[in-house]
Amino acid sequence: MIRIFILCIIVFLPFKVLFSQEGERIGTPYTSIKSVPLAAPIIHSSSYFFQDDMLVHLTLGIDQVQLHYTLDGSTPTIESPLYTDSILLDKSCILSVIAFHSDYLSSSEVRARFFKIDHAIQVKKISLDRIADEPYVGVGASGLIDLVKGSFDFHASTWLGFNGGDLEVLLELEEAIPLHKVIVSTLIDHRSWIFSPRYMEIYASNNGDDYKLIGKSTMYEVEETAERRFQYLEAPCHTESATFIKIILKNIPYIPDWHVGQGDPSWMFIDEIIFE
Image (cartoon, rainbow, N blue to C red; front, side, top):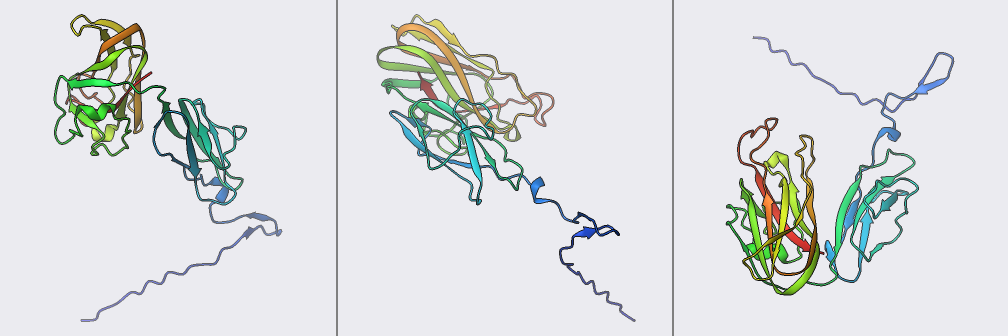
């Protein structure tokens, strides 16, 4: 029996510039560097919450890159403030950053939301009308008021996960205070069957028995193309003062038809409640 072996040799040709017969340069066989987008910048901070002020740093690690940012949630342009050494935050804001370079396409936009806590609300007691579903039990209800923001890792102890159904959170404060806004931090990750609540309602009472509706968030419409992100439900409130606060998070009834898990209960994850 005769065995035949075929040897394949891969030859790497040196970089060439292409010319026409007249000697005019017409391009290269390789992609131009100017068609390659920059990587996304990285936002560094010690926390998402602060009382007086806080420094935030930006990095990317490419020579001659320019990082432009805004603090009002608008998309940065080349005309937006240029990052140099650090950014001093002294009020709640949405930090948006885009990287620019003369040799590359601009990066995708990176955002982070920061909250200035003017006064820490003293909570006497916090309770839930249901227990978080295993294994996403976190540290319990107290983790919703510890001013520790979760990451995209919903397995971490900063998150509480609930499979289907609504959620009611009841807080008893040490003393009656006025409320201007309630914000609840949630997670959207459709690949993991995690959806934002549709909306939330805020009720207040001074005796723990008689509650009055004082605020409601706007209705969130489920987006098929929604990327993984933090979702903040916000409800402006109208009350002079209250000792008891009840927050009701209304979940979507089931996973939409366009999702692989259509018809099943969706997961709802929350990690922090913020009062303003």
